[in-house]
Amino acid sequence: MDLFRQELSAVLPVHLCDLVSAEWIPWEMVRRRHGDLPNDPLVALFDAYHLILSRSHPVEALAAQRIPDDSSQCLRCGTCCTHMRPGAVSAATYRRWKERGTLAGEFYMAVGEGRNRMYTCWFFGGVRLRICPLLFRNLEDGRPFCSVHHLGRRHRPSACARFQPNPPICTMGEVVLVP
Image 1 (cartoon, rainbow, N blue to C red):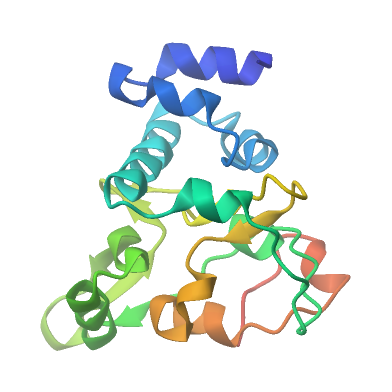
Image 2: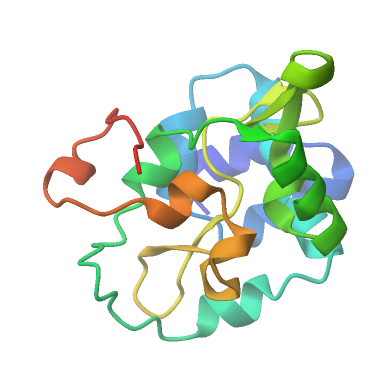
């Protein structure tokens, strides 16, 4: 186990320490996006992973599958999931996600009041995450993958569902996620 993961074991609460050995976690991206941050965002990310597992999401089964190449020319580099946020969704969209049990809704937080209320991502436990918590590492090829992509467009933020990869621009980081 590398030094980052060993140090993480000392930071995480006991109930999350088993996750340090999970190979489906995109460790390189977690280290890059969270390695220099205070403990709160790291703990929130691992609490999010814990929630996903507690919801019986088939993380390990998905991570073990061969993921075919995408016809949209996505390189599965993970840039869009680690550097960009898909933006706010309406209260109606958020409500539909909650009714369907869609995981994406677990990581949105309300902003605004009354009729202007929107929901923005990626949050967990009131803490802004620096990586989409639905991004995992495929064990077959080592590349990132979206753990809800296979469920269809209704289970993803609309900006994610409409996003069109544009290699090599989309792999350069810090690019705005636009439909």
